[in-house]
Image (cartoon, rainbow, N blue to C red; front, top):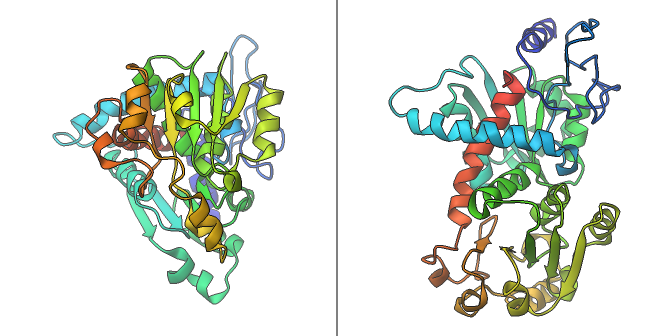
Length: 367
């Protein structure tokens, strides 16, 4: 533990990003969303800042979408743009920004894009990766080890943990246990904050604006952690309207609707995908998640295939609009849509690399 504490102190001495974001309550109980004259830095002794200097809290853990404010989002997106240039230049002169750092990826559920983009992000910045592709089956979790014990062990080998888990709230439990940063890479039907960040970044890059957009969320809105996190995050912007289009069995849950109401965000439920598509800047399609239905395969079959993005949707979609999808897809977007320039989902997936490079840089060495 002495080595871990020394590493934490060394990281705390590095420059920190100008982001007012909360860390785990166990480590920084006084940290709030507002800037504070005394930053809650892991392992660092607090010192009074000169009154003429503005000092803000560091970026701690990434657990939920609603932890970010607009200033934090702007800075993350600024760094992500910088990472685009870093990635382009990495083939000739690899970055050494995170040289000497180790990232552990603990994935208890399957992943392609999230795990590989995090690992690529770390390596593009000169860091190294310790990885478990199926921690649920091929780690000591199969022997009954608790998540907390796994986290306490893995943090001794690494500088940051990226966790995907099948239980909602698991990332918060991990962050409350660890003394190093934890990134939520999806916790069951709960949240997927880094996906929401790359989604909003993609909307900004594709549409050119975030305020005043109309967004259609389509598909599995009850079990889809991506749409939940996106709803939380897009609510930070002004004059947003969200349409929910889903089969009855997977409608958006009331907690998201209540949050949107509290933020003054207009929303509407609809059963007419073509009508919604004709009015939206973004159609965000999602897969009906069979793995969340358990033994109720009848409910899954009733929901699957009801709302499909195809040429009919393209015919009514505004020319400036885009189609997004967190992937993987099954049959909810037909393959003939791929060639349309408004099909943004593979560009969206690439943006995940830049957002995750930005987060790793901000968490480990600052901006």
